[in-house]
Length: 115
Image (tube, rainbow, N blue to C red; front, side):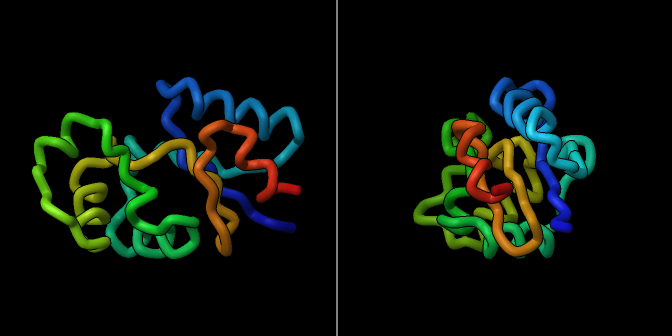
């Protein structure tokens, strides 16, 4: 049986919708509240490798903190370090099965990972 981890922010409506969708389909998930327990750089590297779009896809570029960093043409490592330093910059929700990961925007984007 596949073990799923949902990187979740309960204050985010899309994240709540994704969790509700998974629960409605009786998918057992480990919920990781990444703002309470931030991911370290090693974990972020692995997650980026499993995610289509890699490290650039992990960043919420519309966040004020990202703009404040003023990184010019950042490397993947700089992006991941920014998330490690400022967890709010991480895209959400993300469902990870240990082999592949998907961003749940919209939440239905997670369905191909669970079916």
